[in-house]
Image 1: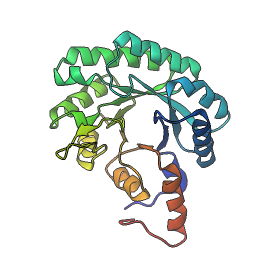
Image 2 (image 1 turned 60 degrees about the vertical axis):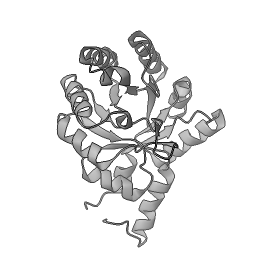
Image 3 (image 1 turned 180 degrees about the vertical axis):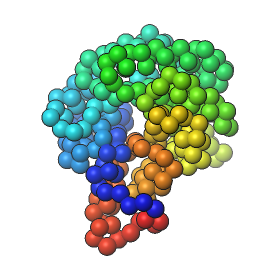
Image 4 (image 1 turned 120 degrees about the horizontal axis):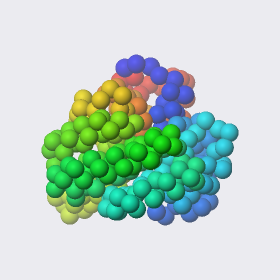
Length: 245
């Protein structure tokens, strides 16, 4: 496995501050942690974008937010408004959830036009667009492949596996999610154009997880365990070694 620096690992991380119970103090602490470790971005709830932009001014950490989150069911014009407002508030990366019902209906014109509308806004403002598929809701590979093709045609910046909140009823009656599986990541890297990056979200909790997905072509991850991942790099330098590293 290729060895990478702590800085390279940090710049793979979108530090996620999206849980609905996070209060303002928790968000501020999360922003400060992201700044301390110089990660790629803070992915924060839309109402807190301006706060994050103010706190991260002058740093190398970008501000990201979510659109149509977590289920993607908003009207297209509402997603457009959210995108414009988020960029006005200081977001430079937008993670948009597709309309899963339309994907499963194979209404590909709707899906294409929605993504095209959002990407028109992001490109106009020089922001990056990540399109979230919510793979746990998509049976088999064909829906994911078609989404990769559409995103490639529209030249979005990233395709992304999951929100981390796409819970599916399990055989035992509980609700859980798989998130970013290696099989899905390999599939998405294969079917997305070379210029479209792949983001893994859901279940990436350790340095070992991070290195494993990096090996299959992932360039960005959603993480809540940011500090643990980056402290593990320090532990590795002190003599430890994650499996396969």
